[in-house]
Image (cartoon, rainbow, N blue to C red):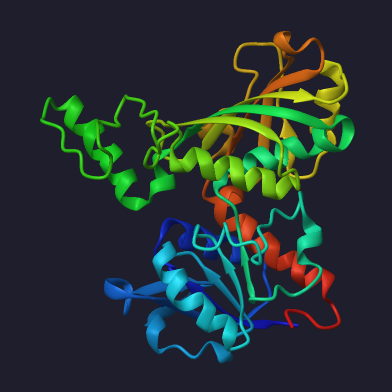
Length: 344
C-alpha cells in the first residue's frame, strides 16, 4: 500500500535529507506534495527522477494526504501542523514547536516505540533534538541492564544544527581567514571558524542555556525517567556535519567495561567502534557523516563512580538519525504497527 504524503520545508537541510532517505528506503510514496512559505514557494525539487514544484502551505488542503513531515522552522509548524492534524493528516514534526507539549508524543523508535501504539490525541508526533536522540539511544541499553542514577554530558554540535546559513558562515569565515580578510559574524555572535562557542541558545538566571535545558528535559521524557539527575553543557564546534557527545553515567548496579561494550554492540541503531589503536574511535566527519547509525567508542569505567558508572563517546549524523531519519523511522514504525489500519 502506498500513501499520499507531503513534506514541509523541502529546501531546508533536514527536508533535503528526508527526501533522500525516503528514496533510499523505498518508502511507499504515492502522491508527493512539497510545501513551504515565502521565497521557497515555486522552487523545484527532484525526487525519484521527477521534478516537483514547491507549493504554498497556506493554500494547501491537508485532507489530500495521510502523512505530513514538517522539516521547517517552529513557526511554520505552530501555524500549520494543528490545521493539518484537524484535517485528518498525521503530522511528524522535526522542529521544537511541540517537544514540550505533554500530549504530543516525543519519539525515538529504538527507545520508546510504545508511544506509537495509538494515534496521538492531537494528531502530531515530534522528533527530539539531535543530542537528545543521541543521548537517549545510547543510554537505553544501560538503563535496561543496570539502571541509571545520574548523567553528565557535554555535547559538541556542528554548525548545520543551526541551518544552511550557519554552514555558509563557517565556510566563508574559513576562506576569509586563509585569505587574511576581515571576518563577518551574522549567524553566530562570535567567530565560529577554528573556534568553540560554549553557549547554544540564550542563558537563563541559573546559568544554563536553552539548548542545555531542552536536552535534559527531552532526554528524561524519552527515557521515562522524570527525576533522572542530569547536568549538560552544549558547545558549538567548527564542524559542518555531525554531532558528538561525551557522557559520564552513574548506574544503579555495577558493570564492567566489557559488559558495557557488549550492551552497546547489541543495541539497535548503535555501532560499537572502540579499538585501542590510534584512530580507533569514531569521529563526526569520518564515521558519522552521511551514515545512519550512532557510533560509540572510548568506553571506560568512570573512575569517580567506583565501578557504578561508565563514560563513553558517541557521534551521529545530525541530519540523518539526528533529524530526518528519525522522522522516517517513526513513520515506518507506524506502518509496521498499524498494518490493518495504517495512519488512521
